[in-house]
Length: 456
Ligand code: NAD
Image (tube, rainbow, N blue to C red; front, side):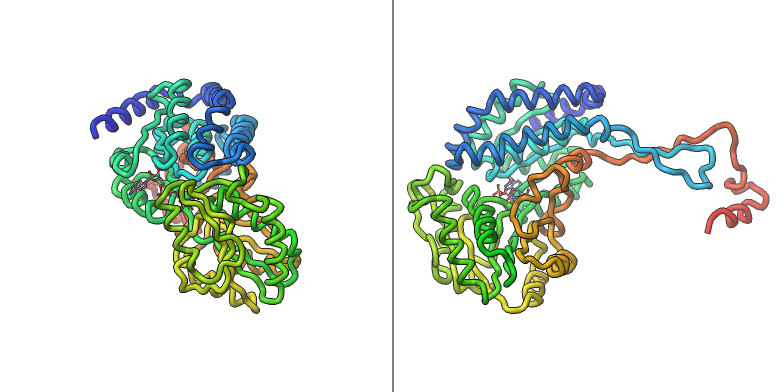
């Protein structure tokens, strides 16, 4: 589409003016973003209710408040992150200085999913602005109310050549991916991640891919079961399980399975009351298609808790299903909804083997009082990140990079990692002209002899 090409050209021309690169400019834009998020908070809350039935509490903690914290942290450290890093120079470089400059990529494309539609579009933008880039935002077509607010908000405060919003579905994304962006930041599913990486590869565009997968919660015999139950269910049923780092399935030691499930049953009652379908603290499913997909999983195994659903409102109560095997459809793909299948084990090594055989998870949660076992899990299994004795908390700190590994993603962000995700580390040697070592030139007499004394 010529329109998109023109848009990108306008961004590039603006980027080349150099205006986006000064500290003062970046700081001002981050402050502007913070203020407009605050100003639009009521509209964002309404839109999140409309698209996902998100409660104000969830909307604030996981979307709006999260972003404000991210901006606060970035503003506090931006100057320090931006300053060129001095590094040592070897003897071969005598007289010179070596530096690493953090260079903005240029114009970045940020494609967002629908599950945290506000936060997942704007948190990468914080990094993009901090690093001095221009950005094109592509929000999800499945959350039209939030996408409209993002578009209105961004248009109100940022010139179109600096940050712009392009709304649309697959065709729009496909066209965007043909454009010569300087960087692509994609958050979404594994299959679309492959499409994005393939499109980027054609033009050798650097990518950050924040993907998904099946993240296990493993509960061993010696875990604090009551806390494990609450923390796993909180992580699972926040946003009705539509969270990339939600525990996808539960792997529990057979000796403590019944007790854990009993605690889970009590915790669910405490969280969402007798009828979660009526709870205003409980999110709904994003679309009819996703609702139907999730409903089909309810016939897998035996429903232990929940299973109730209401099609007209696209809501499924928090559900725990037992008697599940790896061959059941619910174990073949990322669930991304309020259904928690339960598998059991008797030997932790068996769990390690099973998890290793599958794609590397985005997150992994292990519940045990034994530091030795915690260390064993951390060192034996590869996964994006995770928690010992908790869920989700590793992604809500600006001090830890958040991202996947292998099929759960490439690159990371949050805090300083967001700045780094949108920056190229450019190495510069500033050479002296006060003297010159002639032995490096092919014409030098005894040059190789000298070089061998220095190198090797
Ligand atoms: P999705 O991959 O279907 O869509 C994400 C974005 O890609 C949307 O903006 C969509 O318009 C666009 N898109 C869809 N099909 C495309 C195509 N063929 N070509 C180009 N672009 C296309 O993902 P989703 O359903 O919106 O989100 C759910 C997935 O995202 C889950 O797998 C979840 O685990 C993952 N996710 C990951 C993170 C993370 O931070 N790692 C966060 C949230 C969600």
